[in-house]
Length: 67
Image (cartoon, rainbow, N blue to C red; front, side, top):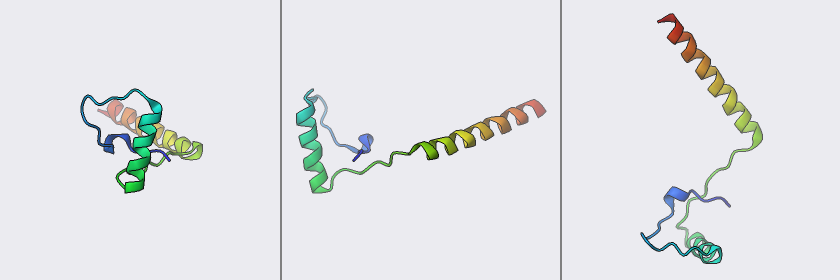
């Protein structure tokens, strides 16, 4: 399960550098309900987002040309 990394509490200067230790911490936080799951988009959703971004860019270009 992906976790929203900005919402994970970490003390400054406690970087363990060990994947196993980090996984253990995340598992404990998950069991305690202290982590927020992050939604990961699939290819279809990303494709739709690309179309929306392209449309927005085209509208901005059109408006810039008009002015």
